[in-house]
Image 1 (tube, one colour):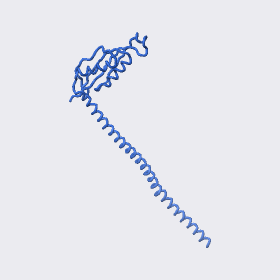
Image 2 (image 1 turned 45 degrees about the vertical axis):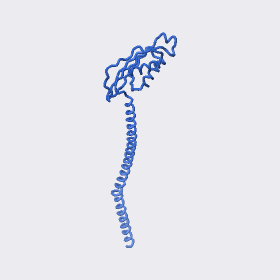
Image 3 (image 1 turned 90 degrees about the vertical axis):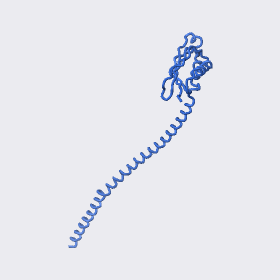
Image 4 (image 1 turned 180 degrees about the horizontal axis):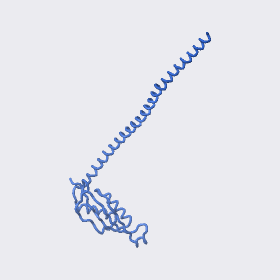
Length: 189
């Protein structure tokens, strides 16, 4: 009988141990595992939020840089607008253009006549067409001189017609007929 009691106690111990194991396994499966999964999801979400915050910090740095560039550009624009003449002074413009052509060594065949100013945003633009003749280096100097004039200019088009006879004699610096179209700007004040 004692063996029988010991056998029943062993069965009771096994059943108790199995019940405790099943209870602990149930707690692990239904309690700890969902919490672990939720924790891992929260960790992943935290990583994504950190990445997003880093992007926003980068954007705020970029925004500050862009704002700084905008202010610098506005300052440059104000400085350039100060150079803009307030009205068309045809004689002054033509004399400045003649000086540029003479310095470059271009023989001007036709000069612009003051035309009506055209609207160009908040500015007025005067389209100019000049036909001149000179060697290749002189043409380059003339274009550079136009750019360096004490006014804002925009190059609209340039056409070169090279003299075939000059190519035979001086192929490195041929004579060409140049037609330059550019616009110069004025500011209404």
